[in-house]
Length: 566
Image (tube, rainbow, N blue to C red; front, top):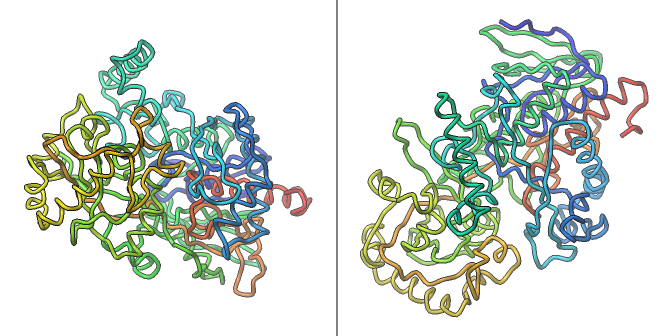
């Protein structure tokens, strides 16, 4: 059994991107840092994510020939957020996010790579590309035996049982027989995975958000952070007008770690707390949550006992995504978020399970999908694809060729039929209604148009579609039998409603003043985007930035410099 520290300069609660960034930055600034993780693995929701980090005017954009600046990013956020725009917090984020990135890439194992992914509001002033950075793949062997301490990704997001693949690599590997470079990449990845499996272990190559979790874990470990899993924080010690410690459960007993400088709440929001979900995410009741088991609102509840306020006034309290559900061969339940490929690509549509009609631009970003679904009262959806689309892009958890959909049909995850009318009967829909929907869609898709929802007419749709397909990368008629369908529901990737804080990530009390020694970052900190979603990584970008800010503020106070240091 590990020796539990009794004192620290700084205690961090939670090990997602916010928590591990704060812990690492604090340790690298000379603080003795303890990180408490309720689960038995580190990584939180970050380990399940796409690993995108939204940072405007970042130093990677010029490599792609993209010009960006702080002023245009601020204009864009003003346009997207409207009345939810908080100048003090947004300005701090714009001032500090690039600084955070430079620090993490210079002093830690974190490495982000440029991408030309478009922002999510293409018509807004200040819109740009390249603000969403992606996480560089990571060799999990660098963690040694600690590899198993990092939360694994959603199994079906990769190949086979544990082969992680980034979207860019997935596209390249689909063309393994069409170019030498694609063949070499595929052969290399397959050989590495086979080597791991022959040694009786899951794949060590880490990609997407799992790579970010792995990189952050190594950074925290190497910086000397005391990383303690299975340690659920349950109370804050408040003495002399400030937070002075944390009470946590570990090994069947309660322990207290005193803090000389501050506590950072980064426990991952409340996505797995049923009472808080019913109150604040009640519209998600028909769907599923993809948040990990540790996201139980611990940080928020502890702060509320001291007068911390959960902000009730957001545009949305969750990050929404279309997701499907299935039972694995071992009896466990899997949830698959449709973040890439399938719904964005030609030969697929989504229809309301109540009437068989389309209701949304299927190719637009996931938050828009959730907002439209909830606005229109759509709770069950059938995602329909023809055989060519399934073979080329997959369908939900079903991988594209050479993988076959047969086992998914046999398990009941997917439905299959020789015609649209027959598929309608399989789905409990009116055959005439679904046939009319598909015929109308096909008629216009043949010309690359979607007069009903404008699919493929914005930069995001175009980017996420099939660049090799024309005239519209998002559209093609559904004509290649057999036809397949899976059930999709609007589900949540994370709660974004959190504690009110100031621009230094300090938790505000009932009187509006900071609670001394208490900070919040990540999903415990009410999103600066207030439930809006300006671009991919708009959750992880602020999470890491305000984790960084909190750690610097604590370090500055420890050095007697005050918050002017930040």
